[in-house]
Image (spheres, rainbow, N blue to C red):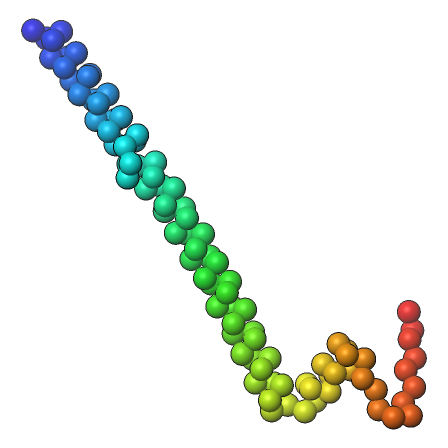
Length: 89
């Protein structure tokens, strides 16, 4: 009698484990989706930070003449007339 209960308990345990881990929407799928969700949260935070930087740069470009001049000189190599550039590299 004790041996039959042990076998029954063991077979039910194996079935339960297989059901929880192998089925669609089982624990393996849950952890996979949870990791994907965590990666999406990280990506969202990175994109929010980039958006804030772009908003700040846009505000500076609209209202700050020195910043506009700095960007024009550094990125587009603009110079004033009769200005001489000396490269020290």
